[in-house]
Length: 366
Image (cartoon, rainbow, N blue to C red):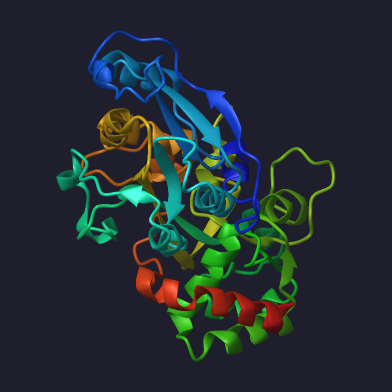
């Protein structure tokens, strides 16, 4: 499994210490000359993000050449940890742009006033259904992805059992003791999977569904890396001893991630996706309130909506572009799972109930 996907899912609601990494080399002059007096003399745009932020050196160098700004990235753990860190430092922001808050945690960031409004160039090429703050433009949608149950093809073939396709399938007797998922309170995919069950069964019935999952032997671990690399039987992470669970809560991008760099390329990925178990995540970028280099921050948000950046994301961060006309690499098209009808919930509903749902899930399942 690609290391970027590993980084996406370690502990959603715990704080982490951020580490700084400079990702772009020097470039030519440009709009960087407009950097406010309070900004760094080196014409640097500082991007605060989660550990999964990645972009090709050539793409970031193109941004530097075009604008004169270098890019510096401060990574802060999982998306939830990075958001929490930004909230703790909201009076003295550590950067100019925050990237990586998703729709499961968006309300938390907006309620704390982390972002200044900015309507990015190119936003008219982004589908309206992912513009969740269209009225105020405090955040800009950058990518989307789906949290889904992933299955080990070889295990199901050898046991002559059809893999599950839907949430309802997972509680059937033939799948007893087969699923491992992440703790909702400590993992972003775990939280998304729970929200998918709420969207599917409603606010009155999702708890009953989890009682059925518990009775059917679902295993809960702290985070994605433990679930996928240690407990999932289909992991190709290089462990000598694989896990014994052929079902794991992961991402719809797991199949292409398993075959990138494999030579010769297999006819199909060794892992598949239960497409009826998916919850759509949307990631956003925002201009941090109190940022020193607002001009550079706006320029970088604009750049994230260009085709150059959008088409770089799939193999760097294993997410899908949101800009119309942006294409995905052939390995994504060939091996990736197409999720036509993912579960979703309105941000306002998540905001109103998320904390209570996490408490209820904890008491029900753990």
